Image 1 (cartoon, rainbow, N blue to C red):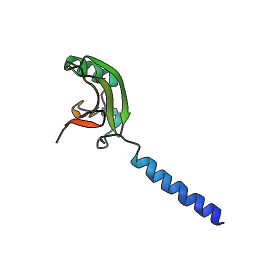
Image 2: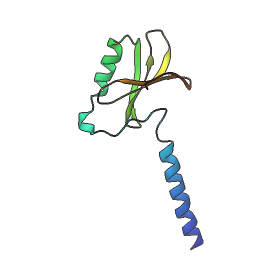
Image 3: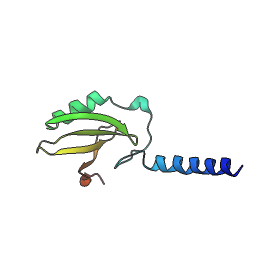
Image 4: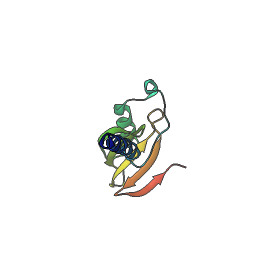
Amino acid sequence: MKTIIAFGISTLILGFASQSFATGLYTCEASDRSSWQSTDQLKEKMLADGWQEVRRVKEDGGCYEAYGTTAEGQPVEAYFHPVTLEMLLVARRGEILFRKN
């Protein structure tokens, strides 16, 4: 019985811990997924805004997380709001280069 209780507690702790590490550097407020723009629209916007390259876009923490190269040639990780495609955060090797207030 103690083993089952210990296993249950361990599972709960790991569940909460994994949720806290599920997102990266930024978290977006919840919004209806039907209102999200597509990742292709984000890629087009980034390139139109002068990004040299967009390597990957994925969902993370309710945001779009994009990996690409800025107009200045810096490889970065950036977070965008999935509805407005507004840039929220840009980081390079863990250093925050831009964060929307």
